[in-house]
Length: 56
Image (tube, rainbow, N blue to C red):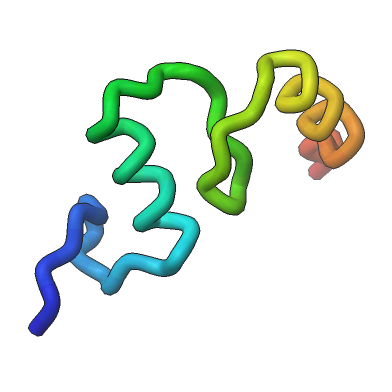
């Protein structure tokens, strides 16, 4: 079985691998859902665009 850095023990996706590699390399900024480093402005714009209110 391949070793994983995910807390749930599931195999890493390519995005997970990019995320963990970014963090291991010392990057502490925002990371998008694909595991890519992004600027704070890009992150905030995409988050606002994709945000959906939690309606019950």
